[in-house]
Amino acid sequence: MIASLRAALIALLTVSTMPAFAATFEVRRSISTDLWVEWPGAERWNDVDVIAAFPEWRRHVSPDDFAELKAAGFDTVRMPVEPAFLLHDADPERLAAIMAGIDAAIAMIVDSGLNVIVDMHTIPRGSGDAYAGTDQIMASEALFARYADTVAQVAGHLERWPAGTVALEVINEPTLDCYDRGARDQWARMLETLHGAARAANGDITLVLTGACWGSADGLAALDPDTIGDDNVIWTFHSYEPFMVTHQGATWAGDIVAHLRDIPWPPDAVDADGWDRIVAGNEGRIRAALAGRAERRALGFLRDHARDLRATGDPMAALAPPFATVSAWADAHDIARQDILLGEFGMIGREWGTDLDVPAQYRLNYMRAMIGKAEAHGFGWSVWSFGGAFGLVQGYGGERLDQPLHDRLIWTLMD
Image (cartoon, rainbow, N blue to C red; front, side, top):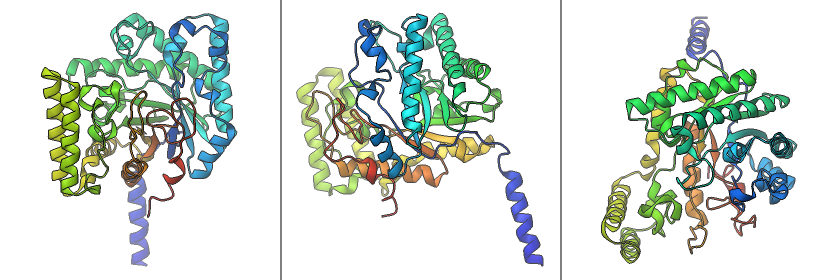
């Protein structure tokens, strides 16, 4: 009798300390589709054939591909939508055609038994680009107001879909500095604006919200969720650490990683002599490609991170800090772990116009380690991505990889 009363009391205390509410939409195991496949220039964004295929991956992905994802254990597709394409002009017929394309894409995914996060996927653009990127949206009050209106328009359009089936991510990787008080406060206000615009347009949809510092764990932990005051929210963060490993050879990620090759995961997949040869080979590539300050910076980045990775007794410890940061933040604010999403992670496989070819096993090792961390903390996750440089299924032009990885990602976690 005493034992049963004790068990009942423990159960009551456990329930009373759990968050009272959770988001309507649930995501546990997700994959992102591509943002673009062919990247048509902005001068073509009013072409009928470009608009008709938006989101553009629909040219290359079939219902059978989504059925495969479902069979492999995924429950959700994070579907990036290019906001610049929506901001390009306000012609009603053009916008109606774009929304129809978004609906067609959602229908293809939902018909395969998967849920959808419509991801307003802002990315940085150069100052000379013909269309707006994240930095421009962050810097211009007028452009941000237009962006907030666009988020509201998309949210309102998505009312036609069940709230348990389709969610909306209001922005991707805001670039403001979460360590600077002024920038941190600025992002908090901007996030409140985006949330308010979307919620006013759609009272039922689950909204996916993120912090500054490129949507990092630190950026999320800098937010006060009480200022949002909404239980129907999923909080998301991205992690690509160690950057030297996940972005080796990525020409668009800067000189510190553009010339790197052959770095395994985990680092102890090769012996000490093999590791030293890999580092020396990368030093040679950096010296051949760079000079002056850029060379010194790239060499310093390589040596410091290579030393730290090799020195740790547990390479998996390099993955742990973001998860610990977000867990502590969630617990401090009484946020259910199921309402936290590791919204992006992954490891590059190939790069456009280069000879980069990262072994599939290294990529599997890394992604499975990250999934293990996420699930151990009770977080959902979404791997980047279906195609492209980080593709698990397809390459750049929609071609199927010789060794697709999606079907080996989940069910082998316990091997």
